[in-house]
Structures are given as structure tokens and as C-alpha cells.
Image (cartoon, rainbow, N blue to C red; front, top):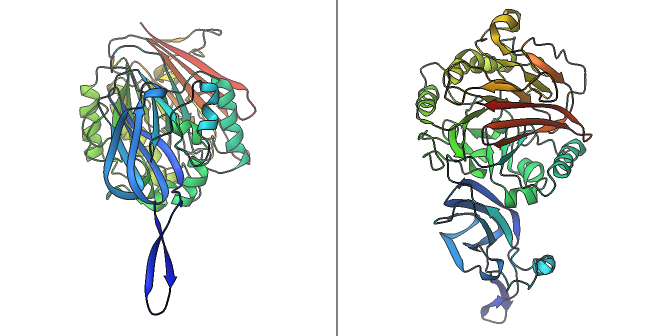
Length: 447
């Protein structure tokens, strides 16, 4: 970048170049819409410049380049023609220096003022089984020591095992989902994760304070690049508010419980039915912000709580998800951890829950307990799903909450995040609290 220095002389005004003024990356890079053959790379700079990504499968031979048109401070570049399930090295904004002879020297080469080299791995081809690790963060963005502790516990837990994707369950940046909130709560909290791991998100009510789903405008929609055209699998939704994607043998469905129409004949419902009909993946995971069931910092039995959003997701959308064979429903909003039985068919308030009717397998789901959950591999409507509220990645409730909904096997008023591991026909779920304790776990097996 070249800035201009003004030199005043009489009577002429001269404009001379001021050299060596480096443009700084102030956000990112971060990864969006991963597919087996493409990746979107985003970042922000403190001044306008061209959008360039240099990349390759060998750190010493990063010879491919992708660009976006024009100059900007917000850079969005798509890398295409990639090889599935392959590790890539990349640098944004400028070509990196000649790489060092060994990875040991890489940190020195990536010092400030030089183009840092990061990595990502493309997803495997959709369909075949491939081990997948998913980090789930609900209501994370408090910018507090608790959020930091939850993050560090996960980093210790996963160690050198790569995270394949991150799911944000909404209320990602408190209090108002502003750009400044996101900078502190997300981009400065998880910088290394975002450089190496694609992130997917759903809209929460706090994100919605500065964004609008009907117009797909505002901070949330400016920050995220999401697949409105089914770029990563599924059916075209025509909006970034709700969408789906595939990763290996898992189909993910993101719904907008906060700001899109939730009627039984609305656009989101019509899209959901089409999407569920289309998918042939072994696993279906749905995620959205407002819980189907909760007795934490919110109460799904009260229609006035969250303006009926929880009731709508349970009474209108859950029956369709169950008919489509959903396996796992992930939500936040309530700042606790709650995990249901393997259940089906309950769409009313807690008082109408009947374990003899609605629990498909009344076990803990644990291989070291009274047995894992088992489902047929063939898509089977109403064979049961587990509903999880994991909305405490930023904080838990500061005061006692009931935690007594009969649909739940376990409920904890503890801060933490969740991990989903899928390997072929086995899904393993773990909840880690902010103290580093493994507080819940279960396994689901397709037969």
C-alpha cells in the first residue's frame, strides 16, 4: 500500500509517495463454506487493497493464486479446484516469503510484517464415512474469563486432533451482536481455530439486534458467508438465514429460530421438507438457537418466554425433523446444559411428557453404563433423536434454575462446550465444563 505525503512549497503543492506503510490484517483470516473442492477465505485489513490468496499443498511450493475483483478492506476469496480430504497451506494479502527449510523455523518466517502461512484441510467427498470432529459453541460471546476457560479446556481436550468444523449456536457476540462485539468475542477469542477450521453459524436473538433475516442485512450477514445456493450440499434455500450442508456422511441443517417465519406453511418449512427428502447421508444433525425443551435460564413451557419461538420449534418444526429421521438437535439460548433421552413424538409442554410413550430407549446412552443408543442405518421416521441444549460456552446461570424438564436425562447449570465425534456409523457426544471435567457423554450407533 502507498500513502501520500503532502509537501507545501510556495507557491506549489507537491504530492509525494510515502513508502513502507504496511497494510495490517485486523481480522482473520477465517474459513467459510468448505466443500471437497473449494474453500472461502475471508479477512479484514485496516486499509483497502487487493484480495489475494496464495496457496498450495506444499509449504515450499505455494504456487496457486486466487483473487477477488477490486480493492477492499473486507476480503472474500474463493479457492476452487481443490483436492478432497487434502491439507493446504495458504497466505492472504501478499505472497509469502520463501518458506523455511523446516517447520521448526516456520514461526520466525511468519513474524509480523510478513505474510503468515496457515493451513486448512478440505472435507472428504460427501457420502463416504470419514472421522469428523465438531466443536459446538452455544451463546459463547461474553468476552469473559469463563469464555476463555471453556475455550482452553477444549484445546487441551482435542490436543493435536484436528477440529473439522465449528458450529456456533447463536448469541455469538454479546450484548448486541455489533461488529465490535464480534471482534472481541469471536475473532480475538478463537483466532487460530478460525484460521484452520471452517465455522458455521445460526442467528441468535442477540445477533439479531444488529441484523435482519428478511433482508439478510446487518453485522451477522456481513460477517458470515453461508450457502444460500446449496454450495455445500442439500437443497437451495435462497437465504443465508437457513441452509444445509454435507460433511462426509453427515447432513447438517441450520434453521433460523430467531428472525425467520416459523409457520407450518412458510418458506423455511417448505425448504426443510424438501431438504430432508433429498438427503441420503447416514446422519442428520439439526442446529438452531431456541431450544425445543428447556428449564434453564429460559422456560420452553411458557409461551411468553422468547415470544413463542421455543414453542414453535418444538410444536411445528420438531415433528417434521423427526419424520425426516433427525438424529441430534443442538440448541443454545438457555445458559445451561440439558440433554434428553432418545425420544420422539412429544410436542407439548413438559406436563404432557410421558416416558412410556415418548422415550424410545430409556438408557443413559453410555457404553460404560446401561447401553448406547441404537438406530437402524436406513432412514427411519420417528425412531428417536437426542435434544441437547448447550448454551453455556460463555457463562452459566448466576442464580439457581429449575433444570427439571422431564424430557431430559441430565441437566447441569455449568459453563462448557460440546464435542461431537462421528466415525462411520458411530456418533459420540461429550460435554466438557469450564473446569476441564467431562460431565456428560453418550454414544449413538447405526446398525
